[in-house]
Amino acid sequence: MPTDLQLKKLKSAAQAASRRAYAPYSKFHVGAAVLANSGKIYAGCNVENASYGLTNCAERTAIFSAIAAGEKSIACVVVYTPTKTATAPCGACRQVINEFGPSAQIISCCAGREQIAVSLEALLPGAFGPADLA
Image (tube, rainbow, N blue to C red; front, side, top):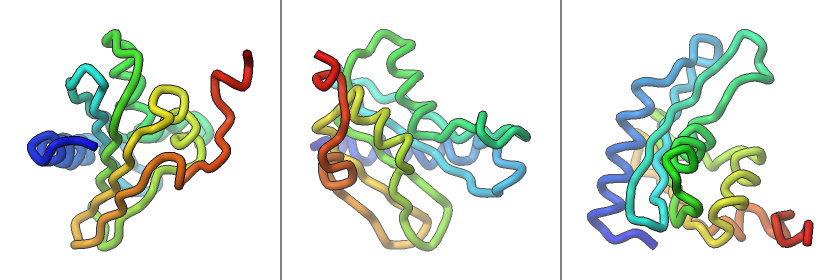
């Protein structure tokens, strides 16, 4: 679980990233920030594509940025949507989170007061992961 200061920074980074989202089709601007086990924070936004299947979610953008920077694992993912209710990560994002942070904490926040704080295990019970390939 991140410290209070880390959580504040994660939420701020996710909210800032949501303002950079490229979402001309859904108009659903999402930002995410991940806390790597190194203590560094990486942010990302959703990037849509006219060929919808090529769209990338904010959570995966943030995680891939962390991995591209040399990180190997993540401890927490914060998702921000400028909506009245919080939104949990989609199934594809849950699977990617599992790859790099099977015990990660997931926190979804929004423009309203609602917040979701849950473990990845609760969102993706019985997940398939690297150990299943051994």
